[in-house]
Length: 69
Image (tube, rainbow, N blue to C red; front, side, top):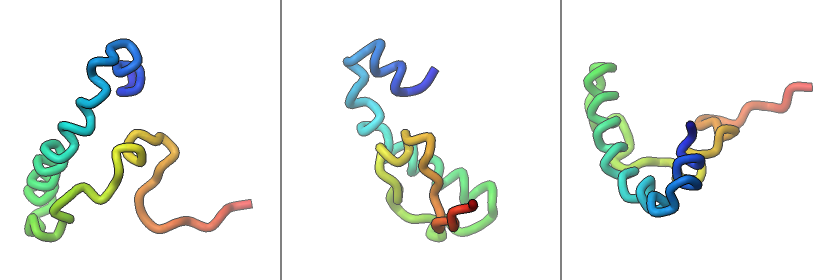
């Protein structure tokens, strides 16, 4: 079940992803630093992606790749 499905089934959750994004990102940043052995400052202090990008299954972070024909 996707986040969109949960929000559709329970509209009261609509604001929840925005409310928790910052907290979840901070935890992910700490974990990424721990797992990679890199300093925490290596990772952006705030989430570099919008909630819309995160929820878009077609969004791929990183440099644009050329179209393959």
